[in-house]
Length: 303
Figure 1 (cartoon, rainbow, N blue to C red):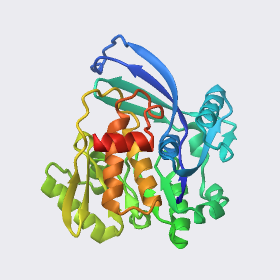
Figure 2: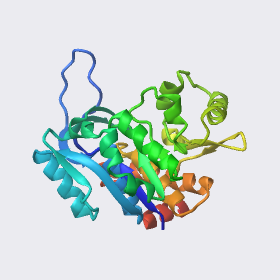
Figure 3: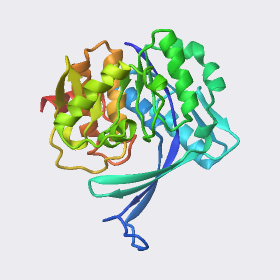
Figure 4: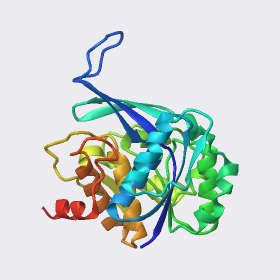
């Protein structure tokens, strides 16, 4: 079993459930509000852990009640909190508006902003001894860039989940062995509108020629797309009839992809597994609570 290191965000998710999004200037009644630990880094680490992977999460929380709650939640789920550090600031939060079959999210970084290239360098030994490094963009870009450099220098495969989406420098993109945007994030990265599978296939092919590595595009309920020998491959997602919460589905995909690669699986098998895991995750409420076990994913795939 390979060791997976996740460096990323830890947030408190404030989830408001509504029947529909309000129009501009409109006030509507919500149905419920819930406070659940989240953050892309934490979510992806929980996904790996629940699948049975060897995971170490590196993150920062604030010196406030939310920080305490986030740390305790991770510990109760079985994850090590030795590398969760407390900063003299507020814990990051994510305001999530949940409507049937979808969500919108506003993130306020808080303690997650305290990552720097210097603090990343302080964990160089941990990074270079990992078998997979998984990162996202809810911590400062220069810190992510530094971690990717260290990993590349020591031959550690990296997965970059470019969310939230922003334009990234070419030299940073060239460091990622696997990059996993959704279609909207891909359009932000490339500056191109993608409306057909033909455009998607040509974009992936050109991307891999320009930057190297593998581009894997998540497509929501359609599954995920990648290129095999220059040919577009789409892995369809299982049909889900009882969608409860799509929050964290992308994080589940990335955690499951990292798990498969750390196990030494070939890329097609890893992507198939990740698509199935992400599809199963939306049948439960809460990003972390919805992360499935290995046995659940295999049963789902074989049903």
